[in-house]
Length: 178
Image (cartoon, rainbow, N blue to C red; front, side, top):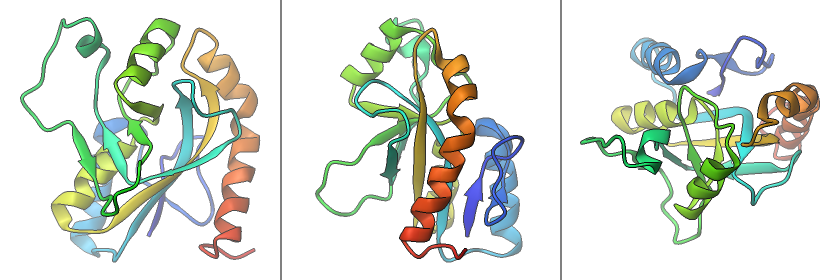
């Protein structure tokens, strides 16, 4: 099953699960309870913490939920905040998820220093639901912006083309037709 967030990030080949951590977890859980898929592939846009370039297509099987409060030590969590379906011994791009978009160059650098590569609001919940249901999963992302003060402006400017690039990537990989 191919998934996407929804709202302005939809594809005719993907099932929208909702924007952000909560809606995507609820809606994907509902799908899995009704008709458990054999595989989950999330497709969407992402912001880069600096190593990945705008319009680059990035794949991952590893997600994290590291919030901004962790960076300044004003918060902690007792839960496991990294989920991975990666089985090979290769370096995977870690996709960080939050209900908030990073707009600070300082935070962007701190996230990068922690080993995080990109951010997408839904991927952590998709990977966590997949883990709970024992479903193999992964994600394909197109970079629309850097996680800095221009994040929203650049996302708006690049989002349409990112959707085209994602469609072309999936066609090239034989995951969708025409």
